Image (cartoon, rainbow, N blue to C red; front, side):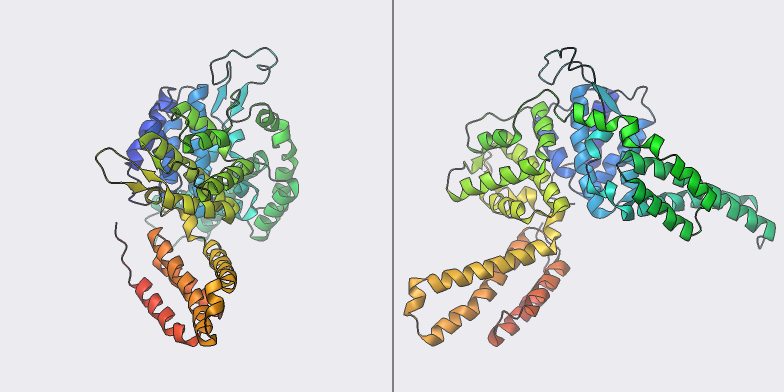
Length: 474
């Protein structure tokens, strides 16, 4: 996790959950909430949230969460799951999954405090599951396989340890003990499969995908054919359609009753014509911002206004940290959906936007967005490099100065251009906290494109050695 995100992660997350779940009171400090949202983009913070949530669940006397607190819990869990999916942390995903099926809210008024009429209150129960089941990992059989085997391994280690301790006097297990151990293993595996099939069906996996999952488990001798049939017979009664979660999701969208447009809200703040939002508004519009249309539209509009010089690039504390949280949410989406166009806009905005603190040095937004997991997306940097080379060559050929050069000088300029683009790209990657070994692989990949003339090959190799020995300045 980046040291630039100045937050005592474990303590802040635990305190937030104590307030949200223990007291039913949302976090009121907008800067603190923005930093929490930002921190959720790292796997470490996401794991802390899932563990704290699991611990808190065992102490709750009710699973009904007041609507405002529920909104904050929803978007924090949603952000955490994006980081969890990227790091394939099956254990943390399972903890949030189980909590999401129990935690819920009941809407008696919208988030503006206006009482709903009878038509609006006919379906007002909303489970946390309905807010987080859009993640692609829930439709990925490989992810469920990993979750199953992680959970099974954990159960078997505890069970076998206890079994061996009971028979610690035996130097070698008898045939009877081995048979007993195998039988117990199959029972544990079947119990885990029952729960896994229930989870899969509740989170939108199709019957075909679940059958494929169980076929694989049978091939691995994890389940007998007759038991597989029992599990398949129970899929219909545990499906999302039967449980009503689909109706819930459609009836109670995120930010229920609030018509605020997250894109317009952000644009107004960036243009300097809007007061910073409250913590409640932040949780609502960050929840709404995860929609692909909103992310694409916001990043595109901000990118165009930045290029046109229409943005207020110097911001005071609250607006700056709110926008850092906005960019964290957008980058989480970019990471999950491989949206490189929106990420390019955020890259440019991060270098341009600044925090103006009275009596302190100016800090750029890149201090907040650097080291985000997205920046280790190799394809993003490769696509960006190739696009800049094409653009650079086009601008070079259309330059009036280029036309006046001699043939030898033209050849020199054409040869230098790809190397200059690579050099700037590597410097940018280093400044955004991209891992050195990843950058070395990126440079080696550009060499295979055969864009560099012979005289630049040695310089590229020098660049590789420099990056390999580079020590980031924290």
